[in-house]
Length: 141
Image (cartoon, rainbow, N blue to C red; front, side, top):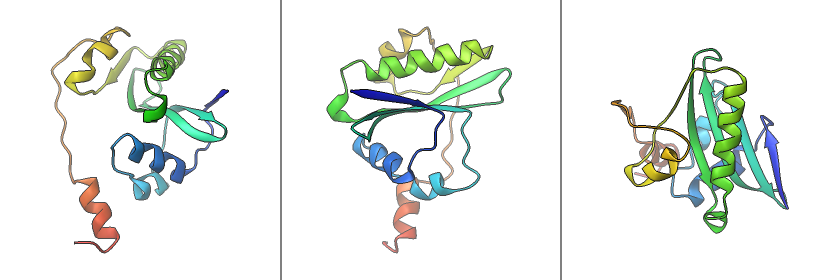
């Protein structure tokens, strides 16, 4: 049975494990930072294992940015990602946030269009490569 938890504390290790399972860097140092905050997040568990997650950062009034939608590969294709997106969008609409943004890869465009997202010109800059930073912290060169 799937259990959804809303805005509850999540283990950094569980988040890092989920990130790794979807092919992303673990980012444990970043998630352990006291500066890391979230406006709203939803976690999905099965048998106490984190299998899905979505996060949102926001100023709480005008804009929100949905980030880190992740579903463990063993659970993908079962509607969990869709459910997480619907729950997040519903929450943000209830809070009367006027602009909701998300950044996604081109191959995921059909998924996000289903929720009403459309393309806009934007830019993104990475200031350092997380994998490189993680290796440096571990002493690997």
